[in-house]
Amino acid sequence: MSFTITLQSKNEIFTAREDETILAAALRSSHSFPYGCRNGACGSCKGKIISGNIQYGEIPLTGITEEEHETGFALFCQARPISDLIIEAREVAGVGDLAIRKLPSRVAKIEKLSHDVLRLFLKLPATERLQFLAGQYIDILLQNGKRRSFSLANAPYDDEFLELHIRHYDGGLFSEYAFHKMHEKSLLRIEGPLGTFFLREESDNPIIMVAGGTGFAPIKSIVEHLLGNSLKRIIYLYWGARGRQDLYLHELAKSWADQNKYIHYIPVLSEPGKDDQWQGRTGFVHNAVLSDFADLSGYEVYTCGPPPMVKAIQKTFVERGLAEDYIYSDSFEFAPHG
Image 1 (cartoon, helix red, strand yellow):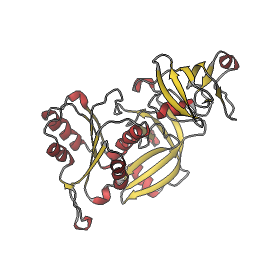
Image 2: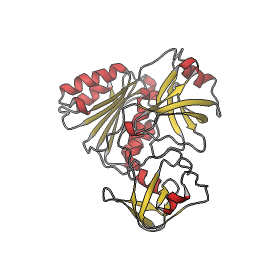
Image 3: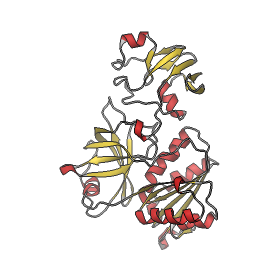
Image 4: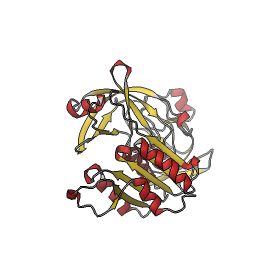
């Protein structure tokens, strides 16, 4: 069974399953309701029930007063509809509406994706969740005031863990620690969400995504956000790497294209080895895009990766008709000692 939920201010409707909270259904339907803990404690997700009925589970609700409850307010992170609803709710419009927070986290899982890439899953305290936009990043706060930036690779609605892709660099202060000393249950302190690289959901233009190396991480967040919210935008995903092993989640990206007619996946290797037995595209990834598109007007481009790649895209794509305002980029600068 499912119920319809109407946003009174916009007269827009989304659907909630009977086992879903109002917040979970809203996020799944691409409505950016604010939240902080998803645990009934902080009150950030508070909104008003204009009509209809809800129920709560057994979790104590410290984020709402009895007086607020009596006047129709509800904690959307815990409230489940038991009828169709009309509600009042705030929505996060952009980066400026999200609180940047410093939080402790614990390493829940470490997974080696390739010879030089780790995937970390970070768990925040039980009373905390980090709200972010697809494509943003966090800083890991290190000793002596140093910090390292890593893009969030999970979709915003899938926020039980924060997923990071860490590439090893010789001499990299954090990457050396992550590869050689970090273990499950290690404690880290983070700050975020940060960055202006995020999906612009108000547009329906076709998207060209260009990732270089671990620049795939924020692209993964954006693609999974689009898939999770059933947003039907045409996507051409180009992932550039040196050799086959550097396409560390190749099968995942391939499955997106295999299972969704709107997604086209084009991996490109710049230096394939004999052992790769590579039959796909070769060369620089931005040149592969230029070979496929004579006219880039009407597209939006999201690109993440090494600075030379990002700079080449910004220059050559504009020469092909792409509007500068439609290039969204995140240049991955390497800090060897930070």
